[in-house]
Length: 232
Image 1 (tube, rainbow, N blue to C red):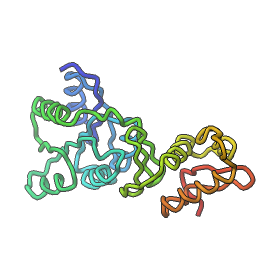
Image 2 (cartoon, rainbow, N blue to C red):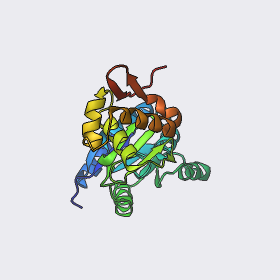
Image 3 (tube, rainbow, N blue to C red):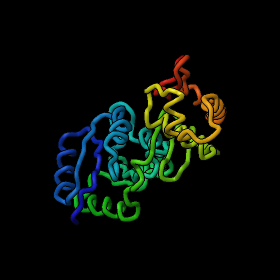
Image 4 (spheres, one colour):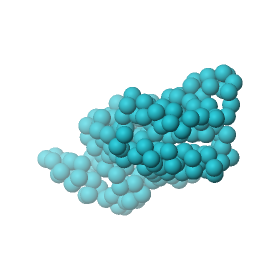
């Protein structure tokens, strides 16, 4: 199989990690490594692998905890997760699948079987072509391709202008935007549009975002910004 798809392997045992990496690379995959359960989610978001091979017994967060977190996050829930575990008990396999894992492989395993299982998962769940269209700030997730916004998994109903305003602020997270700049980029100085219009739409957005609206900060005398972390 000729591929350049990325596989992230979360495994803390060095010998097992080398075995998995060499076989996946031989099959044509690009392989990334992470050895601590506390670091898996951040690596997934930064590297955007096509699939996560996740050992259950990791230091820090367990594979089960990591799987639960990734499958409840709109930015990562579509990514296939294959659990790798030495546990042969049926209840452990069932727990992993109930948490959203797409498959599991029990140690000891055949490296060839592991590669085939991964290839089968990727054929069933091809990489998300729109992954780069997702923007996330705190609980706010905006999908530029689907023109959709979710907060904590709850879908919001926004007008086209509200969506565009939020998208502009999320694309420039942490950077102050003057009312003049927002009028230009969101409304293109349409007729009858006044500076006060920006304030009105910001108020509407805050209301619809609920508690996540705290990310929308007013820079008095200048404009607004979307903060990565709301002020306490």
